[in-house]
Length: 151
Image (cartoon, rainbow, N blue to C red; front, side):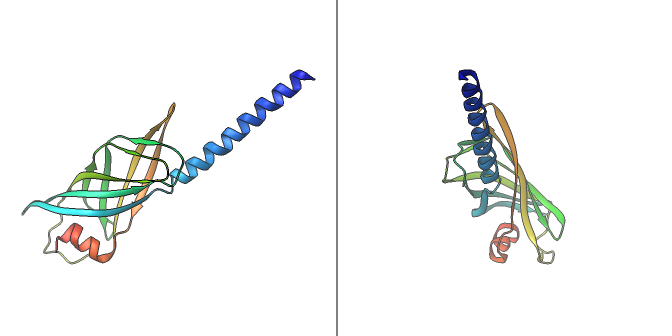
């Protein structure tokens, strides 16, 4: 009888940890991203370079350590540039500001895009494993104008 209590206690613990782990993974996959700052560094006929700062909001209870994150800017279903974010740490239930660089081959003389999105995959190292969590951010028309067309 004692053995069956230990086994059921262990199974209950494993089940509880599995449910908690899955709920935190689901929360971590809901990380919100927004542009907080964009500055044009240089521009020539080949494209433009920008400093960028993004804000990541972590709704989970997990401390998430991210390595360098590559992201892409897509306008009208066409990739117009890509960037790199510095490694960062997201504290549980808080937000972090992350700096990076962005390069675009898109000419400012081209027509304004109807739809712009920033997308990427961040690899977070937690405990004994890592999670690849994609993010997609749709900037407002004003943000897209500042971020891409630097108006």
